[in-house]
Length: 162
Ligand SMILES: [Zn+2]
Image (cartoon, rainbow, N blue to C red; front, side):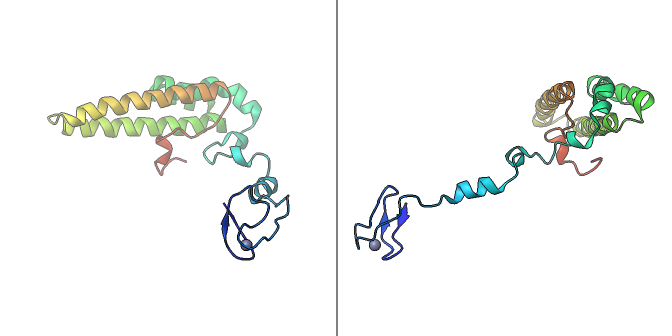
């Protein structure tokens, strides 16, 4: 939609002159969206506030990938192994924190389900949420394979262990 600057008549976007007052429009009007895109840095459209990959040393990531995966693959045991074997690696520690969030959520879910097992809906919800968490863990696993440090979906909304 185009608006005539002279008489404020609403006109078609392709209009070259106003059908009401005859005012001519210049052929190349500046596109505000293009100007916005040009003023942004190149990486801006892909910026993810939950992606901390750039905060970690690429060598640290490649050396400690395996330990970073353990927390997701083996749960608490994996976290303990990672802490013992690779506690000096900031990359491993990042994933240990994410894996601990999964563990905390899991414990909370088990407690809630244990208290409310007599309702039908809570055990069902527990099953569904457990499946979703498993999918998120698998996604985390593949992100580590490609050397990323992203906060897991859903789990990242927890306000502790950033
Ligand atoms: Zn006009």
